[in-house]
Structure formats: structure tokens, C-alpha cells
Amino acid sequence: MTVQPDIIATIRSASRQLVRELGFMGGSFAGTDLSPSSVHALIEIDAVPGVTASALGEVLRLEKSSVSRMLQKLKNSSYIIEREDKDDSRAKKLQLSAAGKKLVAEIHAFANRQVADAIKKLPPGEDHKVAEGLRLYAEALAPKGKPFASSATAIVQGYQPGIIAKITDMHTRYYSRTSGFGQRFESVIAGGLASFCDRLENPRNEIWSAKQGDKVVGSIAIDGEDLGENIAHLRWFIVDDAARGGGVGRKLLTNALAFADSHRFSKTHLWTFNGLSAARHLYETHGFACAEERPGTQWGKKVLEQRFVRPGVR
Image (cartoon, rainbow, N blue to C red):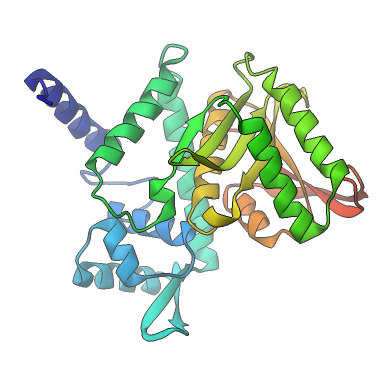
């Protein structure tokens, strides 16, 4: 296929402007005093805890020496921790320290506001074009053989045929195995999700699915109606077993919260239950805090239900 010169010129010009507007040319980046590569590294380490320096270098497209110097600076700043790899004594596994987790949460909050503020300037419906266009162009630029599942996963906004059944199936299979939930839980998920999809014509309601090829491997939704009082309700957040640990959940949550911020909800609430430590960590790194705990049986089995709350963008 022959690409028209004016298309090439337009894309190159827009790419240069993106570099300038996002702060890659110098000065403050993502609200920090770190370099773009360091910010990117922290986000990747947060998305894939235990990643090695070698794998991180592949994702960042950096030479080994550059990665070593960058990681040393992050360690000196107490943002990351190195641990021995039990399977390979020569390798070190990387994870964020408490200070690193706090900083990454601030970076995500800054970036979410930055995207939301820009999207608000667009005509209605244009946000979908921007998201899909950037995704397609980024995937076209990337080489084959991507190292992380997160980079090979597309986040698709809006209803897709079959997602009600697939999302219900992912919830039912996972929570049946891990928490002993049964028919009552499946009925609650299926009925609530079907009813919600009937309300997607409301622009303050949205659903996203994570897809690897044609396979749905995750979902999340923002219900902007059911709680009232300008509160967003985050619902049906699930990642398929085969896609866990690759940053898919983080990508889904980031998209949902950017949507909530762009619609200026006063708060975002979600309900979960005690014992889901990995999910809780993800929520807390994105600004949620546990506001309420109470015994409940809404999912068909008595658990300690928890309500997490995240303040809206002011």
C-alpha cells in the first residue's frame, strides 16, 4: 500500500507536538522531576511486579548500561527494591517500594487528569476516534514479539456482541473456584450486567472489554446512574486467569478512571470483599481508600463486604 505524503507529514507533525505537549523535551514530566524513561520504568515495574532488568530493557528499548544506570538512580531514591530471582541467581526481580507505589499513584493521577482535560475539549464522540487511532498507530509501530501481555491487549470501549455471557462466565468461574460462590452469584452478575447494558445509551455509562485477538480476557464498567448524587460506580472488573499478571487489569482500570474523571463525577465507588489483596493493592495505587466494611450476603455467601472510594478530579 502506498501512503500519501500528506498523511505521513500530518502524523509526523502530530507526533512531534505530542512529544512537546507531554513534556518529553525537558522540564517537569508527569508531575515529577524524573526523566521520561524513569517514569515509564516505574509504571512498567508496577504493572508487572517482579520483572527483571533485562525484560524491562526490552520494553523500554534501552541498552543494558542505560537500564542499569536508571535503576541505580531509582534505588538510590528508594523508589524500587531488588530481590533475588530464585530460578536464576544472576537475575534480580524488581518491585516498587512504598515510596515508589505512592509516586506511581501520583503519576497515574496526573496523567489521568491530563488526558481527561484534553478529551473534554473534543466534540462528543471524538474521544473514541482518538483512543482507537492511537492504539492502532502504536501497535503498527511496535515490533513483533512483544514481551508483555499488557502491550498485546486491546482495550475496547462499548458493548461488544457476546460480552454479557463472557463477563458473567469469567466472574462465575473465578469466584466459584476461589470463594465458593454459586448460582446466586452468577444470577446477580448476569442480571445486573444485562440491565446495565440496556442503559449504555446514557453517555455517563460505559463498559470496556480487554481483548487478545478475538478473545475477551477482561472487563470493567462505570455506572454513572445507579448510585445517584454524581457518584460513579465501578463494576464488573475482572481479568481472565490466562491474562493475570500482565498489566491488563491496570489498563482497564486506567481507562475507566479516565472516563470517570472526564465526566467530573464527585467520587468513584466500588464494592468488593475482604481477602482480595492483589485487587486491593491495585485500587489503592489508583487513589481508592476503604471507606466501609460490613458483613453481607449480596453475592450469595456471607463475606466481609468493603466499599472503596476515590475522590473525583477537582
